[in-house]
Image (cartoon, rainbow, N blue to C red):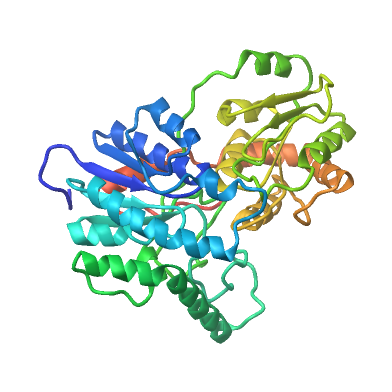
Length: 420
């Protein structure tokens, strides 16, 4: 072992602040570390969903910052003013919470919303720090502007792109710089000039499948791609859902996860009518947007939090927002997808699903019955189904184990193939 505190048991602190798509992969890594004999502690937002998730697998949790739902599940999307209030609050929470939780740990792994404060706690304690991301958005590249879909042509040249990246660094400094350097000074650390690069490091980890998210040539950093961190789920489906699935042809699943104020308007009605236009029943996931049935017809079944790993192999298609976790789970299940992207990395996943031929990327963020029905026509075609099942066999499920081993023995895995 190339690092450690000399104790027989290695302790790793894992932290994030973000939606379930940010939390669940860390829980998958925690379980993988535990399987290898290490101890893992997760610092995450105190949302009830996340508390229950960690309790279910027996991984200890320390609450970090405000609940995510309190920030994102209002009637409107968060504003710039909200961001300027949240950023220093999270910095302070990380110095306080992580500073205490990381005592006696050998490494600190951070993900989620710009974890300013995490590398600083690790620096103060002299322990290893790893920044992990679940997509390439936000990593510097000469080939695409910030926010552009990685790997696609950029309308700007390298000189213009460098200017954009400098502006992005200034934006992050404006949000986090003053609070970060104030807290660094309080624990005897010198100031940092570029918060973004300080947090990212020159060698971030990419916890995404290489088929779904190939990284070679897509960023200027020395990315270590481990594969997606997947938490195995062996929970049975609810009896009512089992009966619904058995009662007819495979339905269309519709869910928008942690999207609340960002969920498309009237998406439950639009998706239900679009599925019916294709002669399909619907499994409607409530999610944070609180999706509800549009009538009392028996062709729609509503679920809360459910085992997607068990459900997706039994549906005809998955209509979703394009979160990294849902995209990966559907791809592994061989379920054709329709992605209706709204924010952040979602347009990338939509484009990648269409590029791979395993589903359709909906044009625009607000579908109509006709537009969503057209996308479903593509997803439900025999060609797409055949391709989705073929690609499913190439999507890896061992990313968390790869990352856990990398943390424990310090070796770098071979760069995985992105062939599909």
